[in-house]
Structure formats: C-alpha cells, structure tokens
Image 1 (cartoon, one colour):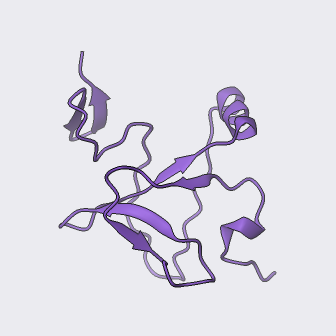
Image 2: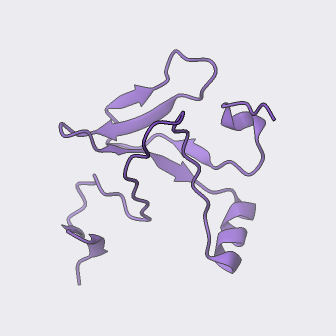
Image 3: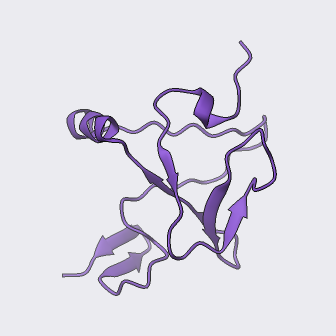
Length: 105
C-alpha cells in the first residue's frame, strides 16, 4: 500500500508545536513533509514538541500509550527518546540525568 509521508493525510497525528528554544526548521521547503520546528544542539541532538488534541489526551489518559513511527527509509534506526518535560528548557526545576530528565525536589 502506498502511504503518504505527509502526516496531515493520516488520522490520529499529533500537532507540531513551535517552542521558545527552536533554532531550526526541518523540511521547511519540502512540500511532501510538514515543517518541523526543532532545537538542535552542536552534538546533533534534535528536540521537537508535539501537542495532543482533547481526544488524544483522553486516549493517552485511559490507555497510557503513545505510538512512535519513524521513517528510516531502510537505514539503521537512530536512538530515540520521548519525554513529557522540555529537555532544552532553561527552567531550573528540571535536572538532566544519565537516565533522563527529572523534576528537582
């Protein structure tokens, strides 16, 4: 089956959110994709932000699950990390640890 790479053509796709720390936009001039505002660090860590509709919030609340689909184009899968905390925020209440981010007491 031929599937479009444009998330707008698929149901249940979260909304891309531009956030304060964004410093680049991927696929800005690629009409087959949606522009992806992101924060990219010097060592190649890319962070993007996604928002849920009310229906999606309820689904996550009751199922506790989110599905991540990565287009690899048959190349090796890159490491991924999902978080509910902004890992690039200047907010001092978040502390980065080797195991991820956690709130400071």
